[in-house]
Length: 470
Image (cartoon, rainbow, N blue to C red; front, side):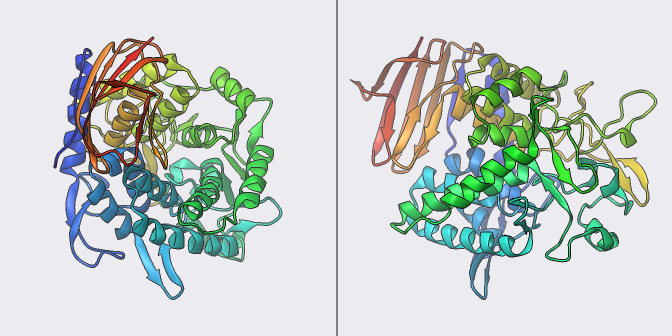
């Protein structure tokens, strides 16, 4: 693999970057499933797994996989599709399927591959239609289903742990009397999941535009945006609630949910400002859900739920991206260096960390009717690609569009010099030198010619870029 090399004047970032690239590389294995016709290299979820997962495939592609290994990312996205009676569909657990849309769109921005975009558009449209029929509430204008990362009951209030086992899916069968009659029917509406459905509508129309087809989802998207803000925004708390349901909901902070609300433009300027004034964090990073549910407390105060209170690096990555895009360099720098520290402490990007000790920690969750401590999986891919995302898209500031790369660095105070070499982008190879601090580009040149901070998608050959900031 021809990976891009990074050297900065911050040794901690350099070392963590090498670990992240090694982590990604180690989790590329041959695999055949979905619409892959032959066994091909794909990005698996981590060292503890032998397959991709739909949400991991999407997030790893979106973060960096589609940029540094576009062919492998393409295989990975295809491996979690299925070809049904009515065409392509996204496969996997029903609550994490729709995030595939975002990964597929990012893959197109990285590569310009319209043959894949045709497949993606069909899969997204068919999947949206399926979930509109089975999990959509016309009354609320929202989709039912758990959080896209939360397949364990430790992500949810006590009622959802009623079956006494780890998987949230068991609620649908063992507590059927509490479920809706249609679809899987778990009667839960989650912030992150509905943000993703909103973005899926937006991106489906963008796919249609690139394919020269009529758009059809704008009204549905706007209706969903209004519904998310109506149902989940909590003006007293100054942030979004996590869950809406018939059992009383949950006003906890969902890290992925508030990050997506910011990244997808669901939160307006005043809401973003309010979120930054009221967010909660921990000494070792931005927590997945805060606080942890009380049933996971221990007498020593060190017990946290597997999916609540703990630090998941992929969620840290989205939060760091969200704050960087909002101009909060202070918050971005804080989260990026915590990501690096957590990884370097154990020489790996683990799945989960303890919020108070920084140790690799799987958290507590139901198992066989009891609550037990779980294992944190080692060398988790989306933890590593989350760090790469923050390097490429924020430290360097690459924003991938249909027409090329716009450069909007976050203005980090962690570095003053950076070199990225051997970055493949479509038909070009890019070498970047960046100097200075601040988030304004005062000088940008490519192959010796000063120009606007933009690389066109049709550029070819070797591109030597110099960026100076102030």
